[in-house]
Amino acid sequence: MSKNKLRVSKPTKPPVSITAKVRARLIAAKAQKILPLETLAQTKREMDKNVAALATPEELMEGGRDPVFALYASVQQMLSFCTELLVEMPELRVFRQRLEKLDDDYMPGYPPMSPITGSYFAMWTQCDLRVGDGPETMASIFAGIGNIFGLEADYLALINILANSRMGIYEHCGLKNGTITLRELVTDCERRYGKPMKWAT
Image 1: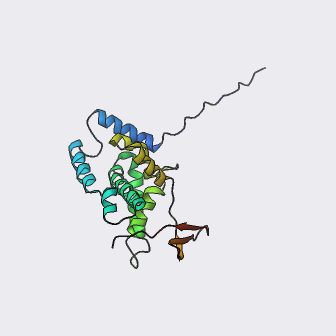
Image 2: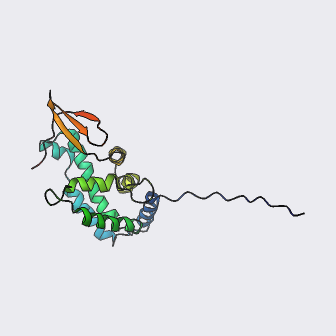
Image 3: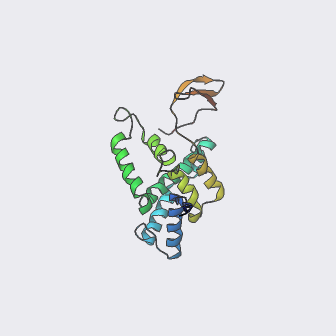
């Protein structure tokens, strides 16, 4: 009489996150003094040039920006710059191709040419659009590797806040006693905010 053997399936390993893959490649490249973005020297010069061009929160506040908005703008500029570099990595090739198609589909700019502004499209692709099958976005990936580039924990915490946020479309319901009431069109939720930001023209 034969006995059926009980087959025990081996536990499957969880898939390695894109953040972990990118981080591992950058750490290895840093140790070997090479980068997967052409050459170290060229990338270093490009980073130095672009980072130097980014406005600091202090500079933005001196220009009349609200302190909270100035901090947000500074973080968002850094995120945009690093996204342009990171999408050239092999691990993000599929995502880069997807971005190119979305850019062709939506043609972000400004009405009437497009209903989507460039800044809205950038925030959506960086903080909302999933990079792979999981929940990762460019913002969450950058938050997970930013310390490799010497970014402080407080700065990375702000990037995490952006990564955990989402875009919305709101109706301006009026200004009263120095606060603005906005109603989100999808959830119908109303939120009140402080004084209007002074946007650049």
